Image (cartoon, rainbow, N blue to C red):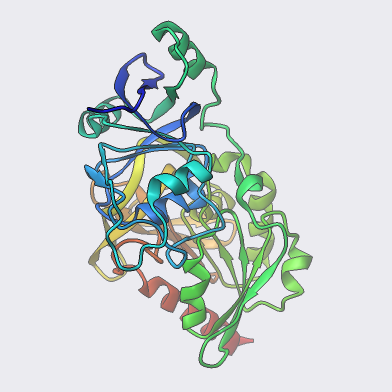
Length: 375
């Protein structure tokens, strides 16, 4: 006998999925997105890129490995809501320190279980990512729930970076001898990113999103890194202008995900909202410079509109699209040919996920060392 209270997942288009209250009871709103990974739910929950999103896990069984401190990607859980088919009743992994549901309740995350997440995912693929609400613990009419969802904020036009960025600078020391210094702009950075750079001998100075160029330069950086993050990149005009100043000075720059979209805007391209985004740890991407196909980890709902083939001209010289998504030909990477700058739209740190793209940190270090050799 299931003693949990009824709960409802209500989409912007009026479709309603019934389930049971799980995690915190109450109501929450956000953008409905699906994540296709069969592992890594803790990294997903603590990834700031998922702020203001209600995440639907397509894997049917979630929570069996519990939660631990080591795998956290930031200081808290960021999702607005969590949707699962069959939550595990126990945590059986030897690394588990806490159970998933207790952690969600402590973080005030409203959830729902017992939902047909496969049917929900197919609906989102057909109709696109949209606003959603989860309701439990209060009796509301179907019409009232739909009305509340449609009054909630949309992701398009959302400026969310200030809510997830670090408040003050911190430093991640290089491991095994310092080869370079990088100033990383925290737009919603994951903990694995500076760690992987540190493993390559890079000392990483992580700055708040609104740091000025003078503040970045005080760390005497050999390169600049633009992190992942949530929201609509078209709202980040000051950061776009900052990137243009960095490019003018020819400081090596590398952007990922949200940072890639800002880099693309700095080159003069528009960004646009994808129908249902790229999320999960199984996205095939072609590296056009090597001809290799990478299986990559993604979480983004926007993309850069740039010509896929050939060389294009920018105010910073020639450039080209370096990576494309093989599912839909969306631009996944940009590269300048006359200045030291490149970007990719996915997560090379891949926590959790495949490590096919970790070479990009090596490419960034090589770019920095070549640039230092020319000075």
